[in-house]
Amino acid sequence: MALFQKKPQLGSSLPLYRLGLQKTLLIIGLGNPGKEYDGTRHNIGFACLDHFAKKLEFPDWIVKKDLHSQISQLTISDSRVILMKPTTFMNLSGKATAAVQHFYKVPISHIIVVHDELDIDFGQIRNRVGGGAAGHNGIKSLVEHLGESFGRVRVGIRNEFTNNSDGTDFVLSKFSKDEQAQMNMLLRETTSILSEFAHGQPIITETRSFIV
Image (cartoon, rainbow, N blue to C red; front, side, top):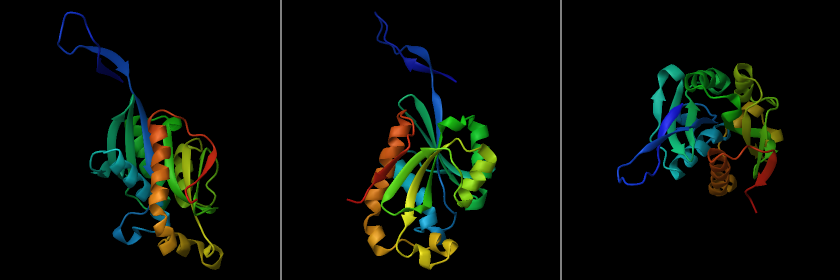
């Protein structure tokens, strides 16, 4: 989509413009709607996106009922960056994302999803493009609607108690006090990753640790 950008011209102090191109990036945080899910492991995607939006001074979230989402957007460098939190429950995240992708015409290569990952230890974040759902209902829904080739920021939530509880109960539980004490470092690291993506750097396969 064409837009106007300033271009200097000799002999005039008036703002003049040139045509340019702007790409659109879509960053999605996964979680369940409702106050009762705030602070749970399964909603870490929402928490990461809220922190990123606050640090980069995105506008307030707007509820888009027809897109089943909360949306905020900001121009960063040469990109229109759209943040999205589905207002559906986790297992219908793909329905909401497909609606937003279609409305804003975002290619799958310009989509990144932040979500909890039960197979990764708390204290680590792993980035990659593509792959299966690994039992995550939100990612499973996204794959069904979009295919596999979107970027993922996988935030580890596994700890020493994971194997002693039902998987569903564990992901819907709150973080421990020790984990909550590390939360600022987690949020800073995910914001760093998302900022790099927003400024045009591709998602590469890597593991980052936020606990020293």
